[in-house]
Image 1 (tube, rainbow, N blue to C red):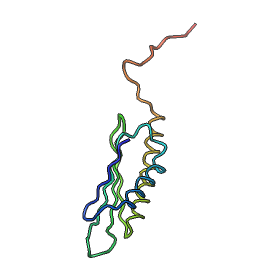
Image 2 (image 1 turned 180 degrees about the vertical axis):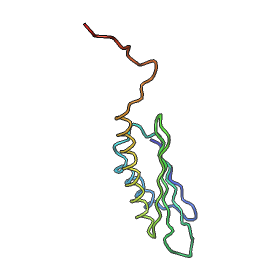
Image 3 (image 1 turned 90 degrees about the vertical axis):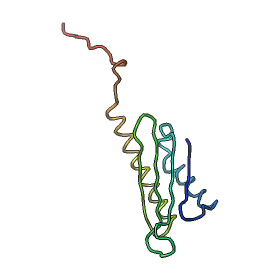
Image 4 (image 1 turned 135 degrees about the vertical axis):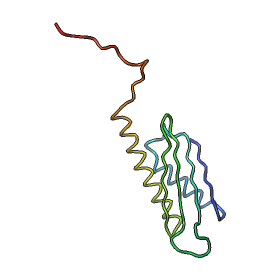
Length: 118
């Protein structure tokens, strides 16, 4: 799994990097085998003006499926990260559950239909 953490409008600290990677390790544990890449984008939308403007966007790329994306904005960046990771974990769990409910059958892997009438 490839993890990229990008910070826009501020410097990414080691503590922030560690918090993101730790939360992702626990929050996305169920989909470890299908996740190929995670991109986390952290930004301060309003800059020095303040307000509810710390944003965390998480994009998860999966094997054989479209990417999943969630975003959360809060006044505290750590809270935004926690909420975004929780939401991504639920989205990934839903995606995996749907994948197991309706498995895609390839045309080359279909079993022939046999008539078993006596």
